[in-house]
Length: 185
Image (cartoon, rainbow, N blue to C red; front, side, top):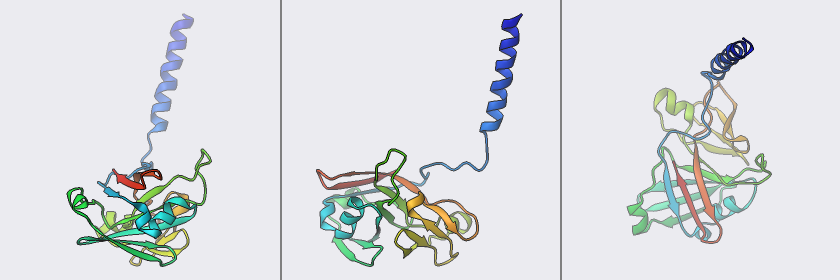
C-alpha cells in the first residue's frame, strides 16, 4: 500500500516538474543560424589578436570579396586578403562577426573567447533586415536602425531599447599555439 502511494506521489511530482519546466521565453545559449569562419594566423590581424588575448577587448570581422576587415572597438583597422584556402572554406554569417574576450569571467573564473553575429537580432527576426551593429562603447554595440543596445560582457544580452532577443552567439575555438581561430555553428 505504501509503495503504491509513493508511486502516485512520484508520478504527481514528475507531472508537476514537466509542466513547470516548459516555458515559452527560454532562449538557447547558441544561435540556430549557420556560421563558419576559419582564420590563421591570428597574429596577422592585430585587432583580432588583441581581442582573443585580452579581457574586455572586441573585434568586428567583416567581409568584402577577397578581403577580410578587422576593426577594434577603439577604431584600429586591419585588412587581410582571402587566400585560396579561404575561398574553399568560405565564411558563412548573417552580417559578420564580433569576436573577443569578455571582461567579466565565466562561472569557471576563466576569460574565454566568445563570438557573436554582427546582425541586430531584433531587426533580423522581425523584419528580415540585416543591419550591422556598431560599437558605441568598449563592450557595447548599438543598432543604428532600432537603437537597441547590446552588452558583450553579459553574453550579448540587450541592455537598452524595446525588449527583444539577445545577440546570436556561435561556437568558437582559438588556439594560441597554432594562432588559429574557428567559428562554427
